[in-house]
Image (tube, rainbow, N blue to C red; front, side):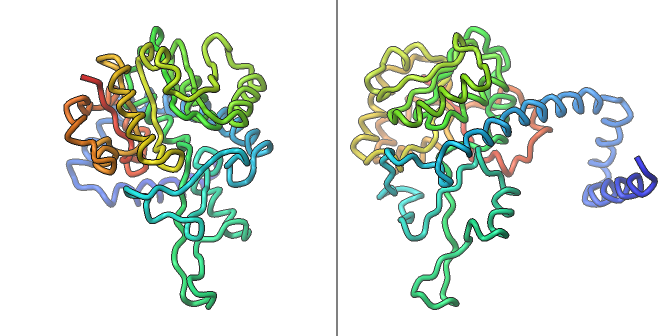
Length: 311
């Protein structure tokens, strides 16, 4: 490292430390002087190595799916209730968080491949912000799920991803967890084909990771045998009646003690469907199982992930 690099590094450290009070500075000093940071640094580097694999997977997916990452045969429609009911075809843009992180989005905006705004009356100055939505989870969210929210000892457990689409959760579970069985269930055949192609291309163990082409409500066996179920927001993929039917199905078939991971609070989801009173006692919210790993994450990026257990 050059002398200029050392000076620049010290500058950045002082910038960070200047925002702390004396108690916080003392805590950081103890962390460094005890050399505990060395162990944390190795774990951070391990996460970065695994993330690079997911970046390579994402780059491969970009080559075989449309830019919007929505397959031609998928039926995707804005919801009519809930926190995304303001979305429509004019004001909404799908940007897949697994394929494009924030830095990549900014690059695409600068190149003119993505827009931040849309015109409401065809006059340039009367514009509104576009709503960016993602039907996948980001790499950071996946790391947080498997390195903070869920237990570390998953060797004998089965993970089920509901609506696995391009497979982001499956690849995250494969590389960030010790889960013995990882299953994605997806109704769209094109999406299933993409997932299987990636699993084969990256030589993932087919005994450990698999994709099932089916409606989840036709596979109660998979639901009942899973120990962890991950559900991304499904509002764009089914109407309210189908959504209610699905949650009744889950209540009937998900076994007691199963972990449920969602990227929106269940109270909001059930409120939107007028089912809160009916299902409020079915789930209990959980604390993260690996709190010691929160040091590796920007918590603002992970505050929309929720962990529940089935009562």
